[in-house]
Image (cartoon, rainbow, N blue to C red; front, side, top):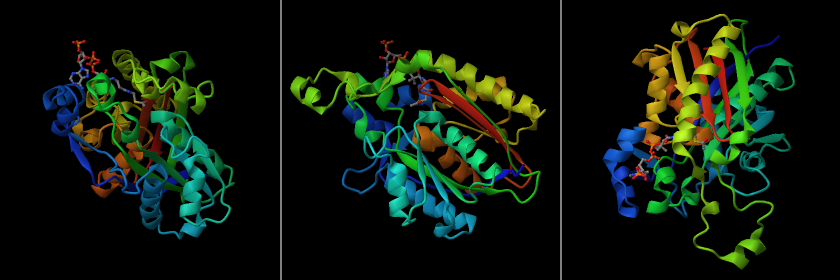
Length: 335
Ligand code: ACO
């Protein structure tokens, strides 16, 4: 069956750099705590009024990926958009990208799998390419976290971690049987849904109810994260799902040329690196600059890794993610 290759990568982040010291002006936190617990030095937050949104940032990243793939945008025959922070409650941002790129009636699919969204999207795209349904799939991960964070001391356990940005790839049929996506693996465990979630507004809590209550103490409109619980599950699931992928194709962790883990927390990445016995040159992290950008983190990191020449033809690339849902997944790609 036809394999799927990544033909082009691109990313876009807002200009507005927010340092840990900037955050300490908003809430009771400090650079030392944030760097020690997360590795994050700064992140990008959308400047209100700048015009940046999940869909517009996604489109900017997409245009770069299209250029790198050397195709015309009109050759795109399917769009997949992964985000937890859509422009609107509905419709999803996939159709907005379709409109912004002027792609006539090309289908657009929205993926709601948070930090694993890009890998879920990659797996879906892979099936469509393998079956010969589509030839140029645009896959985007994009997030506007900053607009919805509790930027007071009450929300500091969550708000210091997240950043905004977008990454995109173009997926095409591989030229040879040796290159491209070798395997993808997806999982979920809904019993932990509320450990990392944004509960309100929801379909039981529509706008009239919100306005009626007008309760400033109601934190359900901000993301909630049981940080320690999520951390413990993340370090286990990351390793499991990477090993599952390696086993499926008969390879070992020493065969990995580059691991790009979802940028959740530098300490999680370092823990996985140690457990999988990978050297520093076998793992790519950029959370220091961007924070956790959820569905955008892997495609932004992949785009930067490509720009920095970290991947050469024939390399084994491993992508892995874990996040809200819980959902997690992995992919092995022969570059
Ligand atoms: N600045 C200063 N102090 C803080 C801050 C802050 N920003 N945030 C919390 N603290 C305090 C807490 O109040 C607590 O104080 P106390 O001991 O007096 O009660 C202390 O620091 C320790 O807090 P913890 O929450 O236990 O800190 P922890 O070491 O667990 O680090 C963190 C928190 C960074 C969130 C970590 O748990 C983590 O990274 N978890 C996993 C995140 C993740 O992987 N998410 C999945 C992907 S995201 C997605 O899917 C959307």
